[in-house]
Image (cartoon, rainbow, N blue to C red):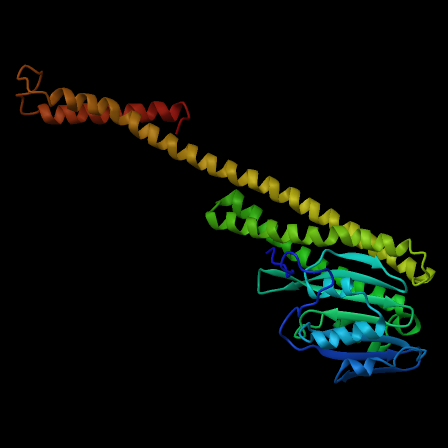
Length: 348
């Protein structure tokens, strides 16, 4: 849950180590209002001449296994070693850092890992005036597929805007991926609530802890995203145009909505824990009440059987041929009378 890649203590800052063993996939996308070109390239050297083309240049790397290629790319685009270190040592807290002529942005993308598990993949963005570099952890999952699809078909404003709008579109797609996950969590919470009210079980408690763990991770990643968008909206470097700022405000509103949903779900989970404990306590009280009634009912019966079990011959009815049945009938009458009294007083 809290796994993190990091250097051994004492390692010099900016030291780079490969994040994964998977070789990256390199993709170059160049477009403007009238043209679109997307192609896979063999190495980072194919990216070196894209600047100054007059088009939007989107350089995408899927995978962190080729440290040499990442270093070459960093040298060509003057990417700071500390920023590259954050790329390799995922997961990082979502953030934005401003360097001399580019922004370094980190975001966490929610990814479904099985039916009920939610994982997170780090997306790193380097936004310059004439380039956008995106780096993903896993080449098997394309977390930017929707953005690529809109650019291919020319839907939306993407093909008529610059690099800053492309960065916005990517960040917006990341934020949007939280909504269906929270919707699914909401349905799970509703089912858990019904289950707790009907018949709480240990499995319900396990599922509650799983949901709380997912909500905790989502909150850890959404909260700093709000600050990230706030910083982009207030940018004074010139990398973000006024038109793109208007769209970024919408992303900021989405993160606020997500935080409201997460907080409301966390409150629901806290109240559901109280419901679970109250239900368990009520069931325990019901069991104790039944056991108390049974024990109280058998106390006088035990007393009678104990008296007639004593070794005395002068006990009334001890030598009568009907003594045993009279004693059993009297004990049965006492038990039924006590149960009737308990029921009348609504103790059972």
